[in-house]
Image 1 (cartoon, one colour):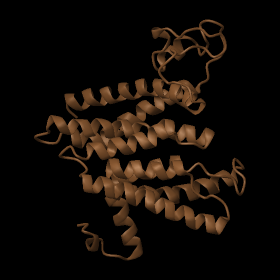
Image 2 (spheres, rainbow, N blue to C red; image 1 turned 60 degrees about the vertical axis):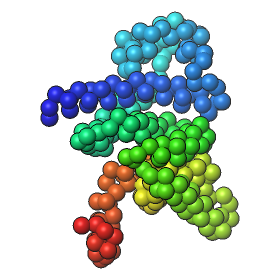
Image 3 (cartoon, helix red, strand yellow; image 1 turned 90 degrees about the vertical axis):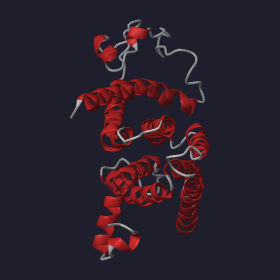
Image 4 (cartoon, rainbow, N blue to C red; image 1 turned 45 degrees about the vertical axis):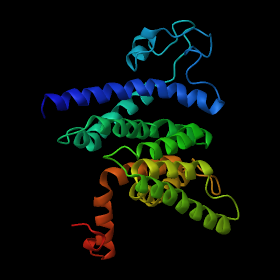
Length: 280
């Protein structure tokens, strides 16, 4: 590893923890339909306005000894955990996805714009997962906003083409609608939330149809095992709605980074020659 590897690795780690601090605000306020920008962060117990040096990711929680400086109410460990997980996730994305993109020979400046928006989209998986688990919703600010941005940046050369973006949005949302309708017939109730459907449209527009389809099938397998595990440990009852958003995010991530390897493995298990799908 050279100097730039360490430099960008540290940069992505720091960016991730800073985003994690902001995501704590998003996770708390967005489900309550509150602004994530104003007013500034404050203690929910005493109203003490959090000063800048009390809002340094992870470190402030340690220095404050996990207590509000105003009323000494304990600060949940979830805040530094979200920051650390987001920082680690950002570093993971750099190592396994953005490193190759950033060090591509003859990288043009305009291709950095789609990469930056892809990075933000992937980082939003963290608040999406937490909000969906806690409130069973995926805010439109993420899904509709991401869909519009994904379609818009497809017109910038060097990334996902407009044809792929529009096809990805249609295929991703369309397949999930189809699965939802089939599930309604079988279960006699709503089987798929519109938040999940809109999110797949966003994934397809931002990353293309391959990632959209991969996120559905990988997410479905992950969701199946996740629901079985939750039933075994009695954290979920039969008939309860499974927050599918985190599993779709996981599926999109795996499809984006290791989609070809996963498809090759599946085809090998099924006894199908990968070359039929253009895989060497």
